[in-house]
Image (cartoon, rainbow, N blue to C red):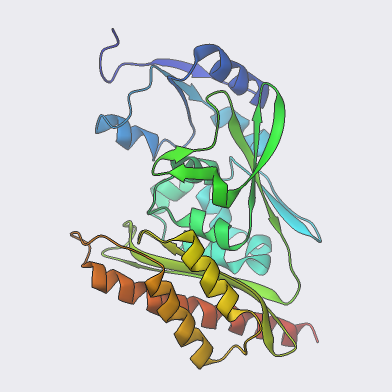
Length: 295
């Protein structure tokens, strides 16, 4: 019987090594890069893997941000600090920089990775919402090759993903749309804390109307179909304060937060509304400003 807190350590030097180890060691093996998600769970006995597979040597293979005309590809080993500091990424998807500014602290941002954040599948995790509103796709690889999973289906429950035990997240692919931008906003009790509530949005503005929209919420138990209704409401309407206010009201109805030490359910619903309004306003302002700069 395994002693709680005890594990065997392996180090992978290539993606194929990591997948081979996952396949051979079975369901009690876990990948670790920054360790800021898994290790705290191990300390609290919420996770007790028999094997830890260190993948830090894969940064050279999976530590890229590639901007192409129609898409952006982000390797799973890109650190939070790089996501924060990348002007190239912020020019296309400024919501990444918005989110990274309020993720944890410099120590965590220096070591933690986007892959680790998404695979943690924490309901209060920020980058999942950012990726969802940007319609991102997760590319995963296992012994049988690669497959693609929409980020909206990557997390199947709290701390649970669609990954098989012998698969790993390789990269995140995000489509690029013209006349579009995004934003993310968060309320936290103290700097670097998990969100009391947060919201993200992405919009496309054409001909004075919202041609495409997506809204996401963090830490407030959002209902995906309800958030889809918010997006449906926005499309075809002018980007006005009246439109934003109604979208915020719909966003508040599309979540079912639980009251806790961070705030009451009503307070969190209020934040969901206000943060939705704020991110929509910011997203539209960024689109219009960008269009002016490129005239």
